[in-house]
Image 1 (cartoon, rainbow, N blue to C red):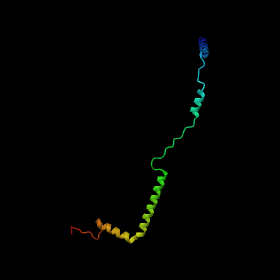
Image 2: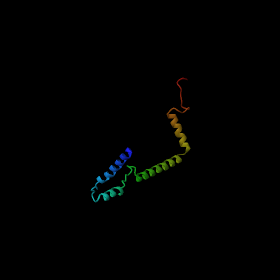
Image 3: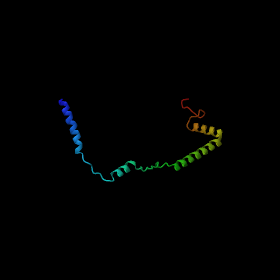
Image 4: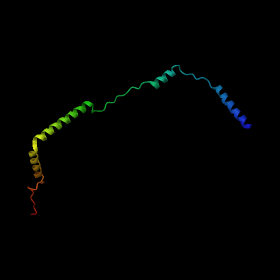
Length: 106
């Protein structure tokens, strides 16, 4: 029965602690300020992507397409005979051709 008295004393002391609590003084606009901070719409920060803007991307794309068209027309108009001549000249210049190779060991 001794534990029942201790439990009853603890319950009484907990209930008496409620009597000690006093109201808290709060500024009248505390709720408004808090609600404004919680639910305010955040301003979106727009970060532009550096120096390679969409206008510059489009200009670069146009330049690449134009260069490809020019290169294709030059390659197509030169024909295969000119290509073969250029390859033979390249091979002779760098000693890759078998017709102009001379050996010092013979």
